[in-house]
Length: 63
Image (tube, rainbow, N blue to C red):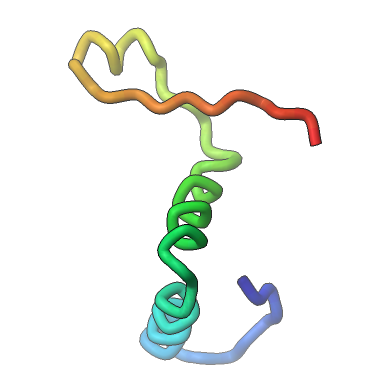
């Protein structure tokens, strides 16, 4: 996604971001979705398991 600073309303920004997202292929959208979790603190997996939640874990892969 483009990281330039823009001066636009919230509605304009949301519409632009949606157009950019929908222009991606389905595979690129899925990759974007997975990357959107980077940097977020992980939930306690034990609590999630007790609640019966489905858990996806990401392994750190050296680049």
